[in-house]
Image (cartoon, rainbow, N blue to C red; front, side):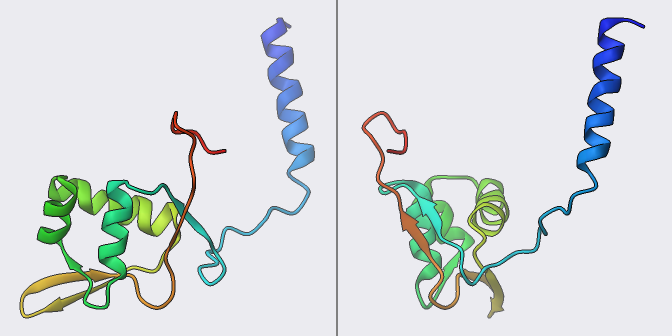
Length: 119
């Protein structure tokens, strides 16, 4: 048996023994999450627009951020819903799609160092 084959079998046996312990659930807990967004970014501008009582349209978000519409849709799904775990409501008002973050949910500002890293 080669070294790599031994390493592979050792890794498999270690993984199988660790799989017997309970895994944490992957359910979303939106009520107590704290989302972090750096100040002065396009993401923060978009989230503030979404938190407004009237919400924001796709055209308003694309104009405010300078992103294309498919990038805004990716931001809404990937960042707002998945990474920041914020509720995002979508409604159709007179033929125009309105997006908004309801309630008191919002993003928390994170102070960064001058090089862009978190303190």
